[in-house]
Length: 511
Image (spheres, rainbow, N blue to C red):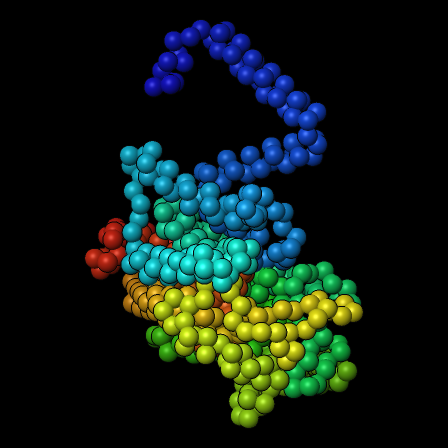
């Protein structure tokens, strides 16, 4: 309609209108540069252009959230946006803007329909119980607003699920999101390997870059690296491994195998035993679930990797002082703490027992909806907390629990934890049920990989609070959203709970 009306005006008149509009924009920019810093004006222009692009391609906004929360950018380095009662990080604003966009489009566009999935209710119930518990604790003066807002922000990133399911509507968008996730994980892995080569004395990454200590043995030449992007490195490794197994062997498979090796090395460099446990669980389940040619392909790639490791080990035996040999020795030593009495005797596990002594009585005293997000559940304890000294920052862990399951019970009660279990069971059940039926070969592997990662995380959260870590919660929301979108678009006849019955598209590859 607007274009038809524009055609009624003479072209000369349109030219004058455009010239006047350009002049007006120039005057506004000039005035803004006088009042504000030119740098802020440029940043505002760049932000506006990025926002326009993101509105057309919401998958880019999701990748932006991952870059800000789960890459090589540290949380403290992000600019803050004041909101009167507190502040927001840039990814917080992106999250809120695109959640709002869903409702605006639903109201303004007749053809836009909100997509419903079987995960909606348990996810909203989990978030709602956590929010309710937190509001009650604040109103009863048992919890301060600032720590509550900080923790609610972390939980809110589970809501990236709804951005994926409602704003990503076709294969192109899914493909770009998944490719972006893999590329981001590769960049992080490369940076971790570079940091390992430089050593802890030359830090180039945020997060924990430290000398490895395991079983009271220090390895001066081995650097343990735990950047915010550790979550994407783990997910990227499992995704590339699963898709390599399920796809036909071709020329690019050699490149993909090299990427599996790079991401696997990065997982090793975290020296995070719960990550190693997630990988073991995921690969064991992959062997069990794979059939016929897929299993043969997995075994073949496994033999290639074993032979390569044997050759590398033989060459390293000739250089007993090499850093790589020390890395292998340290990894074996670290891996040995998985079994036997070394598990219970490990110092980091003894800390967890102290936390349990404080946490379990609090859960018993507040069983229904917990203490609220960000609540402190124990007093200061010198066995768990430390004052600032030398180059070591202060650590106050009164609101921190290594066991992710207990953390959810503490802040959201058994009701909130039950909703999280409900969400997890539905997600895993649907992933295992439908991954074989996905008509898109590349996305079939992604659905299975995300499901296997989450299965491993459920076990890993016994010793690590991944459910409540800033760099994990947006990844969980994204994984769940991608799986549900793939089921909706590429499974011909999902059950009625799947909301939509999709038609079968042509086969292709997304990753």
